[in-house]
Amino acid sequence: MSEAIIPLSWVKKTDPDVLKKMFQYKLRPGYERPTHLDIFAQQAIVGSKRSTCMFYEVGAIIFYNECHFLASGYNGAATGDVNPRDAGCQRVVDGKIVEGKGFCRGSHAELNAIANLTVSTMGLEDVSMMVTLHPCYSCAKQIVNKHIKKVYYVWEYGREPFVTEYLERLGVEVICYSTPFLERWIEKNGYDPIGLRHHG
Image 1: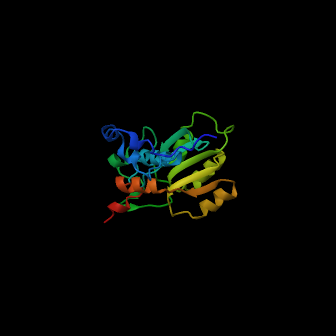
Image 2: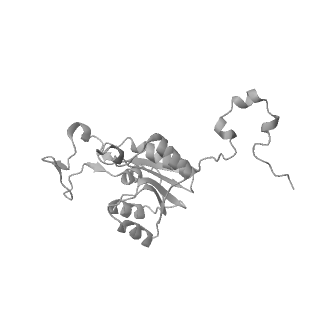
């Protein structure tokens, strides 16, 4: 039986000048590599910055077997439509938000990620989605139709609490995703999906 390898046991025998050239955080005893899920969460958050919506920044990543990337998407106006930053939000009528009238010109991140798939998910095992905000009901229906079996989300959407129950009833596991690594990274970069930090 081979002898167990002790992490960093080689450090004592290594020239200090050589150690100085290495990534110092990897030399710390408590260092852990980010998981694939951490990376997908980061990708979804960074991708959300492409959003054209003036109220929500949302990103989504579709992957399988917990590590293989399939597609990404973010929310915003359809290709060729006007940018809300230039023309204003279409839901704002006479200076007020008009809810429930279908005025929004944006497409949700989850739907855009599904549309960006270049392969069928039918024959794939363990297809998952990482999304920055908990999916809404409309997106949840398409998630089910695409045979996505797990939905990881970073932040709560908070407007349609029944959606988790709907997804789980139809065989989709819903997981609020957070790790110390991701929390530190979000705090360091000041990411905020609905602009709460900027509200007066």
